[in-house]
Image 1: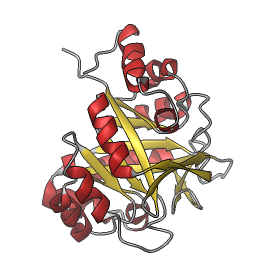
Image 2 (image 1 turned 135 degrees about the horizontal axis):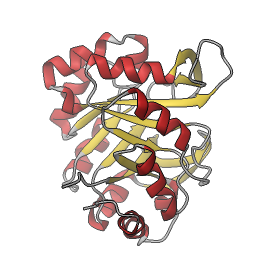
Image 3 (image 1 turned 90 degrees about the vertical axis):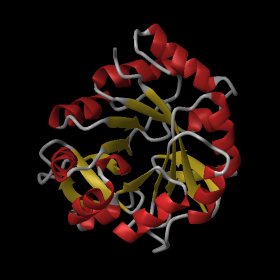
Image 4 (image 1 turned 30 degrees about the horizontal axis):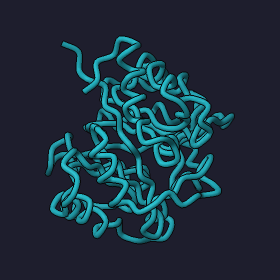
Length: 256
């Protein structure tokens, strides 16, 4: 039997509120993170992802208080990222109620962090969050560049090569977010998904660009094991999660 495709709402949090913009800019308020988490849990989300979008740039710890409150109300897997810099941060998140921790900037700065975390907790708890953008930088042979600090800093690191390296180091999942597609609601970057899938067998979560239910099946067909959505859920009708799953089911994909 095929593994079910997971549909995952993403809650980008800034100063205690869920926000969403376009290409990581012009952020709009979307509500209280705990209230939204409870709502999506009740509506049938398979997992939830919280990303503190300014923890790294603001040199803050991640939002442990929000995680604690959400974990008391939501009983589906919870991934938390933003400001996760050490094994100790992951330990605190797991004790707070998170099921998985997501790393981005800290792993780029010190890739050994991946082994340190997975050696202690197992690779099932660690998600590599990757904000990638198209580039003509000759250092990025794939045409995609890794960015850090919430998409604010380019690195000159090839995104596909980084996914391959992180997989070899033992990361459990990759959350692949296209900055160019983010918030545009024009569809996922299918070419990027295909290129990363060709480089790694690690479970892949597609993020960035979803605008309607019909955008989700092509992402799965390009190689995604899970699909993530934000603005179309935050600002859309209450039955949007159901419509996404119906579109996937109609395309022949197994969903929960």
